[in-house]
Structure formats: C-alpha cells, structure tokens
Length: 73
Image (cartoon, rainbow, N blue to C red; front, side, top):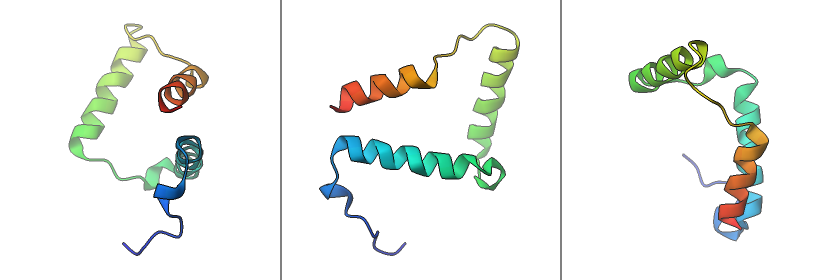
C-alpha cells in the first residue's frame, strides 16, 4: 500500500470518526465488492438468524455513533 494522502496522526478523534463514516458509506454502496472471510460470513449468517427469529435486539445507528463519539471525545 502506498503512503496515505492523509496523515492520520494529525486528525482529531472526531475527524477520524467522520473519515470512517465516509469510508463505510462508500463501501456500503456496493457491499458485494467487500470480501468476507469464512468466519465473517458465518458470524453474519448467525446474526441474521438471530434477528429473523426475534431473539436479537438491535441498537439504532445514531445511538451507536453517539456512544462511540462519547468514548473518543
């Protein structure tokens, strides 16, 4: 991998989180292009089964992001 165009050490935690969000959004536009290991695929299958059976409770993304930012700040 070449040197990054952005020096991550110079970014604040909030700026790094925003960068992660932007990267994630760009990947989520075409999730079929994101390679998964067998273990990751198995975990996702297990979690999907839990959700579909009603055994899992989710947390809204905004709440998750707020918690992450609170820890980083």
